[in-house]
Image (cartoon, rainbow, N blue to C red):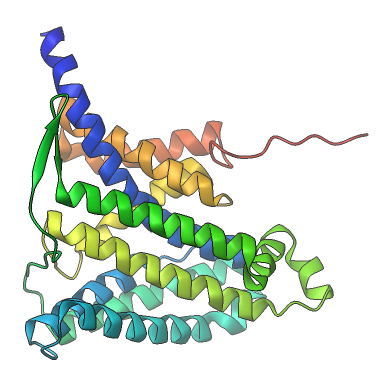
Length: 297
């Protein structure tokens, strides 16, 4: 029995890493907004779901008959506009109350979910990636073209995001705002511009994550928003104040959920995720990668 358990471990770890990349992308979108404005964006999953439906509508003939690339480009443009509008709705209260702003995102999320059901209905559809199908076995682990696509896209996005934040003026302004919003405002930085930047990046991250998630399941009005519980857990585990932590948290949550689903039961997955959140908040309230700093007396 022990041999069987050990034999099942490598493929579970591999699929956990692949799933963790998706959770990490979703968590990065949450952390981007939180770091810049201290707002937890509960509309993130609904906007990502709407983005996936837009790609489906533009590529399947429901809204238009575009190529897959054209459908994605059009969806990016529309989602960016929706992200700008969403931030415009809560911008007046962002500087007044973090809690009120977070609650407002719940309302925006419900509006977006209603828009999905109004335009596309409650039916379940399929949305595949236009990639060649192949697979190979390595040390007993089945590696597919989908797995490699997820890994490559995740690495490209994380690398691009790192370059933007570390090498551009807007990225430097984002880091300054994340570290000390008050000092940044005193120094003349436009905090609303930084907030808008984080909302736009978050929207694109959500769209990419949604397009990578849906081929493994199906697309409905609640598919992507339900997936965001894993992304939220990843953000808590890695720390809402840490972008590297969000990526690492995604991998850890992906592996943990895979092992729990296989060895225990997938029926209790939500309970398991909530337990992970509670344990993390109790023992690592700032996440696993939180900086331990001390001060002089």
